[in-house]
Amino acid sequence: MLDCADFEARAPGDIAAFHDHEPPPADFHAAVIDGLSRSAKAIPCRFLYDDRGSALFDRICELPEYYPTRTEMGILRDHAAEIAAAIGPDAQLIELGSGSCDKVGLLIDALENPWGYAPIDISHDHLLAGARRVQARYPRLWVEAVCADYAMQFDLPPNAGGGKRVAFYPGSTIGNLPPEDALRFLSMWTERLRTGSLMIVGVDLRKSKLILEAAYDDAQGVTAQFSLNLLARANRELGMNFDLRQFEHRAVYDADRGRVRIDLVSLCMQEVRLDRQIFSFAAGEALHVEDSWKYSIGDFQALARGAGFRPLEVWTDARNLFSVHLLAVG
Image (cartoon, rainbow, N blue to C red):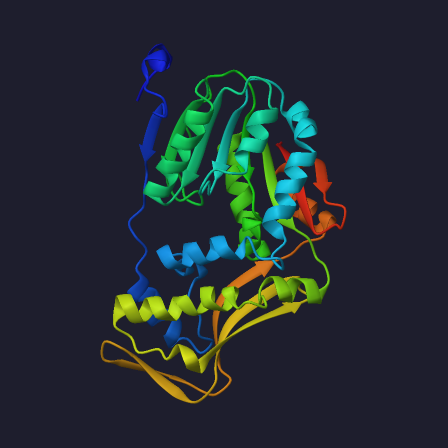
């Protein structure tokens, strides 16, 4: 690791440190066997994001129906000065699931003399490329990349700048967790951040069924390709025999629960094979692949309080599609 005395000696784009806590790769084979053996078939949504799945998700974010990405960017852009004023000078930003590190630039540009940036992501190469882009753009920023699963235990880089430590969790990724799991996750981060720290969380809001179902089942069929790629991945990597033409992507919003449920529905009676095991699908049977939970502002703030946070502020867009919450620990 480089210390502050080495800061001027770094080549442009070099980051201050890289912390490798990368967990062992998830066992796709075991997850598929387990998921297809259940009475209600399901495969965890994390397996949607292989290289092709990640590329398809990037396309989804640009679709006219998929409002979350551009709406959140608009909120951050419109309220960056207010957010920066609440954070104060010399802050250390910690981004959970940083990906390409695009959104955090809106905050860094607005902050007064930000000290450090610590992106956290499970994808080693994607993380390092994004961290280097940020370091090249902000050469005075102390950038330490952390390759880790941010839902697991590991040590955060020290905050030597003297300002607030601020966790940044954009994208409504919190909505991929059922509310009880979201509570546990946020509780873990209150303990990790400790009193005096802040957290900025992007949260998708409850809204019209028409808007939500279109966002997760677009007219061009890109979201359907994204879901069906899970079966294609099983064929490629596990030697399975899914016939993608016999499954249909379905996204249904349950307004009472605030959940968009995404399934691949079998169009006929069929069997698929993995090794020597055979798994049967009835016509109309669903393979569950993802959930996206939506909140009212009050419901999310109640959840945050239960996890040990104190809601400070919330910003929304003009149509109340999306919200960005500023939370304090303690």
